[in-house]
Amino acid sequence: MKQLTFENVHFRYKGKKEEALKGISFTLKQGEKVALIGRNGSGKSTLILQANGILRPQKGKIYIDHKELRYDHHSLVELRRQVGVVFQNPDEQLFSASVLQDLSFGALNIGLSATQAEQRVMEIAELCNCQHLLDSPTFALSGGEKTIIALAGILIMQPTFLFVDEILGSLDVWMQERILAIFDQLINKGLCVILATHDLNFVSRWADRVIYLQDGVVLYQGKPQEVFSQLCVPDFVFNHWKLGVNTCG
Amino acid sequence: MRWIEQHTYSNRIRKLHPAYKAGLAFLVLIVCLLTTNYFISFICFVGIFALTVIWARIPITVFLKLILSEGSFLFIAILGVAVSVTFHPSIGAYRVGNLWLNITAASVNLALVIFFRALGSAAALNFLILTTPVSDLIYLARKVHVPEFLMDIVIIMYRFIFVLYDSLERMVLAQQIRLGFSNFKSSWRSIANIAAQLFIEALQRSRRLNLALQGRGWDGTLKVLNPRFEHPLLFRLLWGMLVK
Image 1: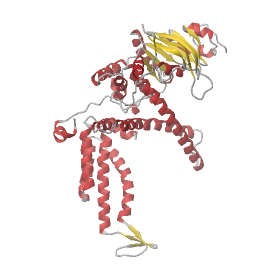
Image 2: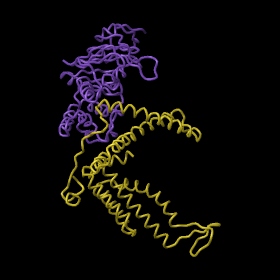
Image 3: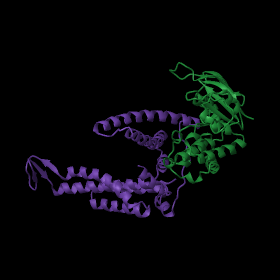
Image 4: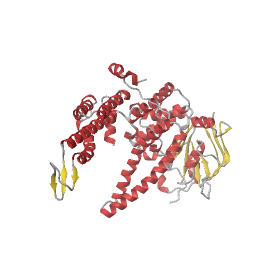
């Protein structure tokens, strides 16, 4: 079973006094459903960029399958094949004029031939139920369709760990269900989904494990009920859902 | 721009190999540019108009809307060729106040040649624009060995036109609900604010797009699958040389 391990990772953005990540440590395993929660600016997005090798830890180490991450070209290609990231705004992820071309980008980048890439595009389009969009221009897609295509563009690389940065919040419930159904199918096959979100109700229903970040530190991690019992959450969050969590009015 | 793109993706010859369409458009363009007979240019214009409307099934209104917007600029430009303004009288000149407007048979003929030459050329390019998606044109440009980095810039710029246009629409709306654009002065202030914000947003978005591309294994070249095209036998015979 593959693992992604953060070990005492520190990171500070240029020109900032305070570190964005201050000694982050945790391990992710294949087939897990993990929710990454925390207030705005707590370091969730920075952590996601570290996992994908876009940012590098200034102190500490990241291991994938017990091997330390390296940042040469070959290692990064291998890393991005295994760790996918779906960003919050699909408009910032889709670059090509047509959906088919956009989907094929990741597949060709990991070294598949044109024939293999085309086959992979068809498989992913079927999984995401977006075959009818393949010939469409990206500008004509709805918000939900763009999100699905952005997700499919990452899934085409068949990652083992998928970081998803707050994409559900802007979608209608039907589109959310569609995306969660895709996740469920892939989690059963061994994908680990790490979902950054602010929706605590959703987290309580969905996640196997919660990682709570505060000011660049993993303050709590564990099962949703365990973590929520430690948190001070405004009571309206759990108004319709009684878990006996610690609310603070 | 979106209304053009909608027809680009839904016309009847959308799937035809772009080399055929580009070949036809450039052939007409070259004829129009080389000929000094405005009747030939006019025939080219009518031919392209018929192909666009009948063959590609682009609505007449769409073609006319596009050609009229270009033609209006053209009409203003050729007025200067057909009519010359002087302070001195000459044979056949018309007096307007202290000025004399000279219109000669030669200047009218030259104006007509330029007008129909430009109109035929514009129609040929409109045919290409209305029937061929940008992704197909990029494919074609790659086939004729236009440098990769240029094509990558075109791809990103094309995508950003729509992304930034969406942002622009939201910003205009945000200004309007706060009484921006309510009078001349506030309109200028709103335009200045939007221009500044749009510039910053373009920079931020390009930075985030860069991150997203890196996350998908980008190695400096935007590698994508080529679209599939139709190759009717007649076109293969006519322009087989153009297509690999």
